[in-house]
Length: 318
Length: 318
Image 1 (cartoon, chains in turn purple, cyan):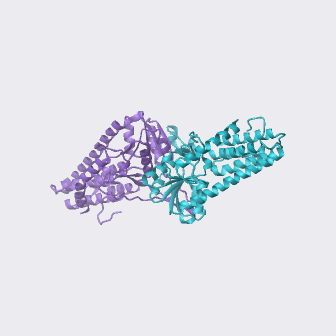
Image 2 (cartoon, each protein chain N blue to C red):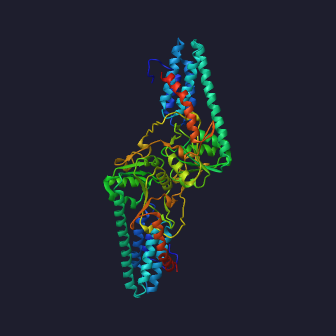
């Protein structure tokens, strides 16, 4: 579990294991757990020197980033805590005081994250309150939060999102909030698009050319929206943006698509990719905590952060 | 079962019931059964006059057309038999001779249909033999026949086609023929499209503006093909073309999408459309028994047939 000789303490390591295995929660929810890991580290770790604590914090940031490489927001919040801590540790060398400082920094980053989500919800509400119906797919806690903010005025069409049907969870959560909800298949969401004012999805990651990664099915929804002249929005904090063009498009178990006992499985190959990259030109706008941004504005924003991230990478990866 | 006083005989009526209930076979396969119904009528029906037989033939054509209104090929083959029979019955008035004539006409129409499929397979093979991989969805006996003709050179990606997974049947049939077959979800077929040379689908019906109807999911596949610059082919005999713009987009049981016992069903609405119309501008070409036709050529062909169909409708519907 622990790569080096050093242990990060049961609490922090438990949270990393939890993040690795969690296929239920989205990246926004797991980012909050990543912040908890730093507080757990401060609470449990026994260190003799400031230097030792600093190494542990950097190691934890690295492990969080590596736990789910495709979830950029995890990397970003972990790096944010680490870089702020390294900065602060220049002026303090008492390990006990530094541990308190780490907890304060983690709390500050959590607060920044919370405020970002709140601002995003407000921008989302302002934009979407003009719509009477929208289409989405899969489950996104960010999209859900924005739609709850918009409230009962909007009717939501949700695609079920095979193979694991996360769309059912989304539909259930929307319906619980009193929102008029229609669940359909991934194949039929294109048919339903004709009835809506706009399509909107969450994002797993935003890449530096303004494209984004999300659950498979998003590319077809975006292309069909473009063809039908429907606006296509991505709802995501900029915490999910990283200056990279690489994205690991891992594939999952064939049995999720076709149970092993179904006869054709012997002769056919089954493929089960989870995520795909959708080009910037299909995105009408990103709804973020910085406002409603065109893909070109997202590119500018990522470029402006590139310098900061480079320094941060240098500090975290040495 | 029988609307008028007259019975069409157990054989013919049984076949109509069979066609009404069949959700397994495609329209190409059911068209052949419709031809069988005329032979069954000739074999079983007791008539005293040529006039009586003519009325029965017209009634059968009408009932076949009404059995599955969205399957235009059923209507076309039935009308084709009826109009040829009405034509022939001008010169003969012996009911026994006319019954033999009806069987001959039905056999002739079946032969025309068989030849059309054979020609279509040849045009399909010539066009597709340049491709190393293609994507498709659902099950189509016509697409399957063409892909078998192309043989093992082509790799085929098949979307499972929720809710009833007809894509599994397609994948199994392709794999049985020794064709390299990849099965994936309807959501992931857009992701796979990047890896193929072309997309191709069957058609349920071709409408007079050059658009066509097919299983839901086809619109998204077509829009994504257009965006990615992949050719998009519809493989269908022109027997599926009718001079109409109306298409009944019926919806099926919600339970096929979400089993009644899954908790969210109480508060959410489930929708389950089966077919959708895809605009002509998304179609690169129709692969038909008349050759590889642009949508504009399909429009010309349907217009040329309009006059004949009008006469036919007048005779059949009186």
